[in-house]
Length: 412
Ligand code: FAD
Image (cartoon, rainbow, N blue to C red; front, side, top):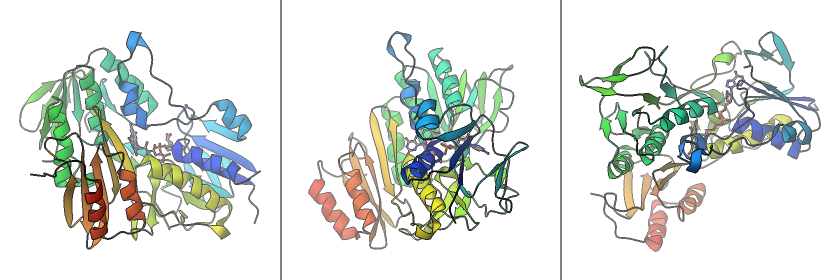
């Protein structure tokens, strides 16, 4: 059946790539992009990095908007419905409801991403922020400019980037982490500790194994109370404790929701015409033969484009198989990871975890390479992604690592 109405819910990276791909594929019907935020689609990674940096002479940060309204409306012919969230999905009538209004589709891509997890007890206190949206970044930047004593709750990637930004400005900043070691789920125990050492080297206090029991302040946060009975004075609290897939609006849709919108390898939800992409999608990745939900820029962009093509031409649907990839910038270093962190062994194959500004660690699952983590390893990380893509064996990966080694290995 020829499609006439292509609708995308979620006007961010995956949603934008979906509408672009539809036009690139030659789709000439109506394209509607529905977004909860007022803003045009914008890029999020800079929000915890360059956007927070101090600029000379009070200059403002660069815009992270992807495309102008003119390009979206006129060149791509997209009907923009911004500033109002979709409230439900009726798959029988093939309608997305935005408040009381129905938008009909015959092909739909769900790209509603994820919402930041919040800290209970923060309601009604100003100066406490999560960092997911441009509005969050504006508020945090303003507080940093005012010289806020900063507490970051959660030593994950976003929290660590914010802490690095505050530190670079010379502010008083402390990171709190409830677990004994940060980033365990993302990169494993030992490598989480290796990443966390960057904070120590840059003079940022990181307190692990301590929870937040309360926030105090008269309208505005003044103090963070900790599970060890101590307290830290704060003007700004940034909460970076993860994200939750934005599926609330789909509760009554009948779609399978389980830590995201569950999809097959082609990003199809199993319901006629309905596909999902980006941080909200939990799809079967054939390369690793498991369900995955990633919160990574690269996969969100690629999934958005493929979900659109598959939704518009399901007969020729292609599978989305990928080697997960993300990066994170702390201080003047770049951390990059490819693959999966579940491993039987993690071996440092280049550099010294304790001293060097550059190291490479490989993850083994059985006799296969499963992942690679690098600090300032921009020149090799994509080579490891290539090895993972072709399901390289462990010995092949070690041989490659030996050929690219730049400094003695030490991982004590
Ligand atoms: P999102 O970007 O989450 O967008 C979803 C959109 O849908 C939002 O605009 C939301 O308002 C909207 N929406 C939600 N519900 C509804 C509804 N009911 N109706 C209509 N619209 C709705 N990744 C990396 O790989 N490297 C990095 O360094 C990195 N840094 C990051 C830094 C920050 C601060 C953040 C927040 C993310 C970072 N990421 C990074 C992750 C990356 O930005 C995300 O993977 C990517 O934005 C996901 O895109 P998405 O379109 O799937 O979802």
